[in-house]
Amino acid sequence: MPKVSVIMPAYNAVSYLEESVRSLTSQNFKDWELLLVDDCSKDDTAILAKKIAASDSRIQFIPKEKNSGSADTRNTGIKLAKGEFIAFLDADDLWEPNFLETMIPFMEKNHSPFSFASYRIVDENGFEFCEPFLVKTKEYSYSDLLHYNRVGLLTAIYHVPSVGKKFFDPSLKSLRDDYALWLDILRDGKRAFANSEVLARYRVRRGAATSNKKKVMLAHFRMLKNREKISTFYAFFLTLVHGFLGLRKYRNK
Picture 1 (cartoon, one colour):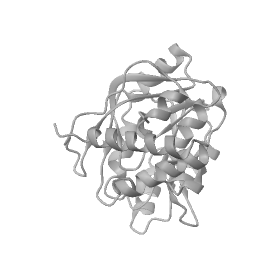
Picture 2 (cartoon, helix red, strand yellow; picture 1 turned 180 degrees about the vertical axis):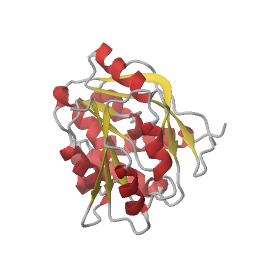
Picture 3 (cartoon, helix red, strand yellow; picture 1 turned 90 degrees about the horizontal axis):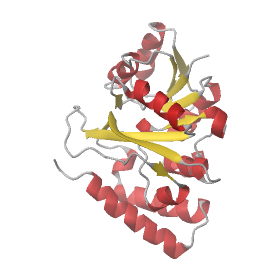
């Protein structure tokens, strides 16, 4: 059984997929499996993904029959995952070679059910255009994350024996579904252990769903109010805080 199951949803990512997978296959830590799930891409992503899977027995290519968004696509991979730890790497993001080598011992040392790390922010061509997103090495509670989501999906790892298999909420339409999952993990009193080391590179692509700030903020407000059962006023306040801090996140270098 692999130590780590890596979930990678792919949709029209043919330009980036090979580089992202290479950032996994180049890891110093080798005990992993990759669940590469194609969400009915309209380009040659599925063809490339199938070719990549044929080159490494640790990679499983899973083609979907119907496009259903990233939340459901990640859930498809999670259902098939066999690892003790579940990690997430999108088909356009990148891990540093020491990501797993650093994070798995970090989680084991801290008996952490859920962890995340700092990361760099790059453009479509892989160039850094703003300061890295940094987190402090410390424990974070549900309340901490409620006030501001510090978790970058590409650095998030959870420990299956500690929390069970946790899934994304497809009803959120792939907007703030990752944030909702982190809150689900921490809601019953568990704590996340953050690692301040910069261990990944998040790629910002033009036209990505999360690039529409108004749409994201509305989804954020609705998720807090309807799913987390927070009062309208407090949900509005927290949404403004997230929006303000989110703008600061992309400050120029």
